[in-house]
Image 1: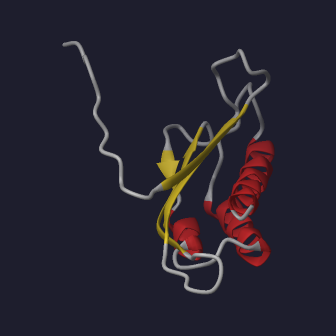
Image 2 (image 1 turned 120 degrees about the vertical axis):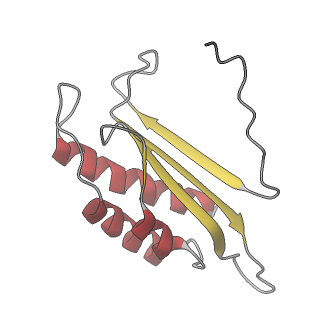
Length: 125
């Protein structure tokens, strides 16, 4: 069998951020991958809370994973410094990273939390 195409429907108004951490840009193998997607909610007088939040990770487990506890921390919240800190702590406690020749589990746990925090804070600017 040959897979000729993959069609992924886009959700209207969905925001997506992705970060790859690796040894160098040209190397396809990553140490940590973090993808975050959300839809901005209604906010008449301030920053919009996040809705329909999805957080996916690659290279931290044997296969790509989602982190439901971290998603629930972000769901309905405004992306601010307090939310970023809580989400980073949650994701670091939620994952059990692999230890391999590319990186240690401790490195992956720390970097995953820091990358998620940065994605959240960057989304506010």
